[in-house]
Length: 262
Image (cartoon, rainbow, N blue to C red; front, side, top):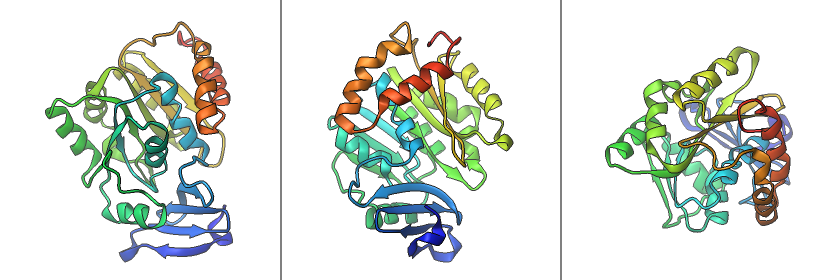
């Protein structure tokens, strides 16, 4: 959905780059003018419409019942609303540096007030360091914080990534949304993450104009001999959520052959 085909219902203050536009079916959050960050279906506010958000939630194939979740980056709150709906036992901490984004998510994207949800208005790297100092551990850590150049630079630093790994519970899963455009050198970023996670890592590359690349990191070796052993889990997750996780599992399987995950 192009901005030109929509009605703009919110334009950010002081050239913040935050913009909300909608048509009869969808409401979108754009950052920095034209970068589509979140999409909410008007008739299904907790569903996941964008492929990249569905791909991020493939983390639930590996950790289907998270108790504690940390998200770095809120956006329109799509991932948060999905987790609140389909992981009722989970408690969520969300690091979001931009207070305007939090307000927009509440006002335009139906982000609920929920006792299971805590939003921390601070940079992601500071929140991760503080949580680590407090000896917290998380079953899922999801990193999805972008500016107009790609993932926020501080979130690509080695200290931040190592702190994320240290925050994972024993069977915890880390998932990070990156870009896979020619200028982004995704292979180098993937190799770097593989080193930091001691090769306990997999990828899910998406097609499309922004060409997202999701990287999953595991604190321990995967508890299965091959990804296709997760077919039963993917069927169950598909049934509960209405998302075709079998499709995504097949993609992960074929894209990671030769890494001991196929």
